[in-house]
Amino acid sequence: MTRARMPRPNEVAAARRDPRLLRALRDRRQDEAWRTRGTCQSVDPETFFPAPNEPADAAVALCRSCDVQGSCLAWALEVGDCHGVWGGTTPRERRAMLVAWRSEVDPDPEAADEAGPPVRDRLLTLVPLS
Image (cartoon, rainbow, N blue to C red):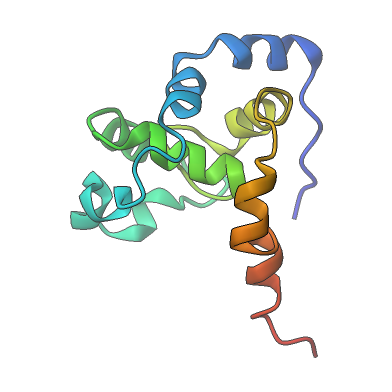
């Protein structure tokens, strides 16, 4: 398994201007039921998780036609998901967007109090340690 590199400053600067990131910032927390309306509901999930040497073009093309692309990308950035295609972005694109996302999105202290620990931390508690 290869280790992902940190995005370069120019990649982060480009990510800040990316319309997909701007849409995700606008759509975050706007649509809680986005998963039920995604185009991906009628497609094999393997499409969105291609092998490292396979292109993700088919998944990205499907995402471009989806109405909930912004909410999907916002979710992936919120939880820090770095695998597969989410919101029409590849893992490499999301790494740069994640740096921009974290500088743009202030943690909402009220939401944190209501929701408990971040989603990633809650998911990790479900994984048994061997």
